[in-house]
Length: 431
Image (cartoon, rainbow, N blue to C red; front, side):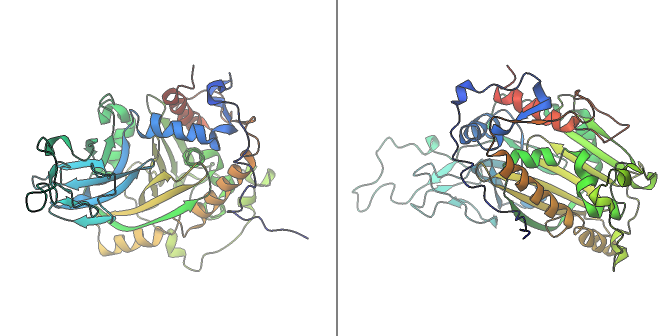
């Protein structure tokens, strides 16, 4: 009797396996062409990532500037496991701070979005300005002259913990570290230029949703850099000729190799028989759409690129598929669970017809589309199979062993190797 495979089925006992102390952990000598399965399921490594990466010298996506467009706007989000508040104050300045009261550590802001004159913790009514500075608290002088804070209590010494903030092309980034390089230096030239291609005009949010992935966050970070799998796994891409390896395209890595761009030009398709000869499952279908207008698109850019995935280390993705523009970011929710957020975008100057098309095409890849469904399933398959074998490793040599740009082919895992290049460097696993 055949048993169906569930995307969310647990891997019994896998996480509980005993592992050698982290001090004894060593990355394979082959470097970024090998990835120890242990990094996807070891709670000690997961805890170290929170310190080294999410609280380390890295710029992280916080929100879009349009989400805090007006004075008093508040947006809450996450940086790793740490809750974050982003605000715009009365002077129009954007701030970011940890969503944790300086008194007892309670969450101060509870809504995803809000607009307030100040921030007040509901627990003991400690009140903060939109810049995170403490303004006052209830019963500071006690009641009827009795109780209250000590005479030397100084409000200036108790504020919400701030982050450094920079805004680029409507994207708000934050970092804990005073040592992180300026944002555009962190991004590098080709990555900054491609962000401008999509984001450097007034943006309009068309829809937001999130989905839970049953895998370690790094498996999704790999997945979005893995152009090799994109048309082998994804039936929709291949069948309807949206994104195939036999279209012109390439991979561009940032100077530091941490970020990447994968791009495709749909009009250049020259069908390769390898899809049929290799028995690729995604090429076995001959389907038609009841609504073929889904794939109708207008040429928005002169470079003829019709599909692109851009990653910013560690957890930001900017995607354009035909005319569907989206920002994705993912948040670790434990060693084997990740929340993936989608923000679908248009431009303020879009015509009603263009906006309607963008909304319809949001179904091409989002949580309601087949592509995201397949990615969620396949990553859970990897999580379940690797968790029981922490002493084994992945083999990542498609396209060679180098970690360089390749603008002649996307049959390569160069961008995946680029992610691990950055990861090993920040985690201290490259020594």
